[in-house]
Amino acid sequence: MSAESSAMTTAAPQRFAAAVASPKVLQHTLTLNERLFFWPFLKALAFTFSRMFKKDITRRYPEQKMDVKPSLHGVPVLVMNDDGSPRCVACGLCEFVCPPRAIDITPGETDRPIEREPKEFVIDMLRCIECSYCEEVCPEEAIVMSTDYEVVGRRREDFVWNLTKLLKPIDQLKVRLDWVRRTYRRWDVAAEIAPPIGGVYRDPRWAEKPKPVERH
Ligand code: SF4
Ligand code: SF4
Image (cartoon, rainbow, N blue to C red; front, side, top):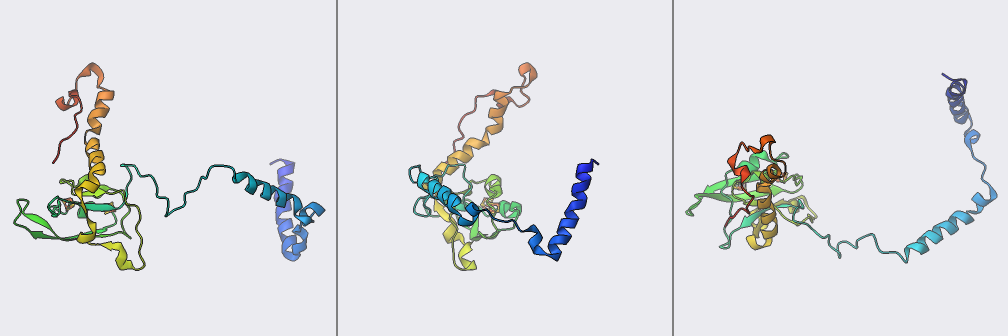
């Protein structure tokens, strides 16, 4: 240890002890300029004035909404078919994978060809971390992350969304559904960008050109 650093190590406890004994020891004597506060005041005024002629970098929310992209993870919602029925078949996969256990499904039978549907489907938005696991695991494209990022309420019950509140017409979710379908073949696209050595694909599908996935 150098002589200088050794002196600093011993000086610090001494100054601390002195400050405890008498707080005036650490008091900095202000200059006249500091006491008048004139120069810092002028600098602050100049800064404020200069900002008046620059473009706003803040948004006047909630009047000005955020520009959302299809990749945004908003709140999860359920897809409603054109006839008003839920697309969900109450398989329970999303309920199983949800990390914070935010989903609660009450399954039931239906006369529709899908045989099962949710009698009640509840998502606790106070628990939901908008991870999109439910969307990824759903075999029916029945639950998707919407572009709605506003979850507001006054009571706890306002944040527990039931089937009626979760169901959204499929037309409103088309952009997100298209984006989700594009991601189905992302590994195929990755393989095409970087084909294996020798040009031999283990999976013959990888040799095909990626096509959009059709789903109705
Ligand atoms: S987005 Fe994640 S946390 Fe929210 S309901 Fe789906 S799986 Fe659960
Ligand atoms: S939303 Fe999808 S994963 Fe969840 S129960 Fe319905 S069909 Fe199954």
